[in-house]
Image 1: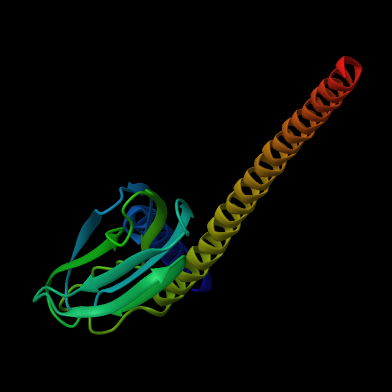
Image 2 (image 1 turned 180 degrees about the horizontal axis):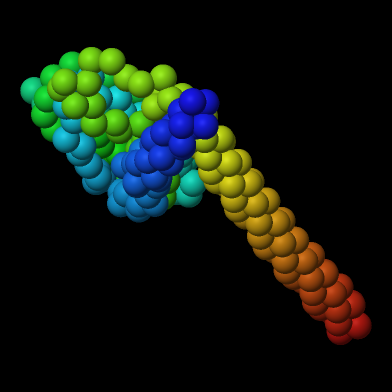
Length: 207
């Protein structure tokens, strides 16, 4: 009897695992965009009531590494708004069916473009008749959320490392050109002093 129960559970667990693999494309979506100066980029997700969605973002390059972000519901009401942030995260549970729009705005900048990486995950389309979620499926979803958190942290570390590397390279370039400028000024001063002293002694000789 126990063996029969095991053979019945194994296909069910396999089915859930395969379903989870098919759910991954909707559970996570990573993007890299370039937001030009004085412009904004908007995206949307069609959600059903009780669906969950999380948006995380980081500014990797451009200006002061800041961006404006907001998310609106199907009626245009602003659910969350973040001004001049380098990184951010927001999570919502849809209270109604419809299109939820989120935007990255660089309208505060007149010259610097911004490079933004963002993830959209946790989009779970829950059927209307799914009042009770199976315990195994709930555990799989919890595991998915944990994996997504780890992935977000890894991407944050990568972007932060690239940002620090760019800052270090920029600082090195500035130091290099400042040293070149100092050398040019030094040689110019020395050349002027030599020319001045030479002219001074030539005037003395004539007198």
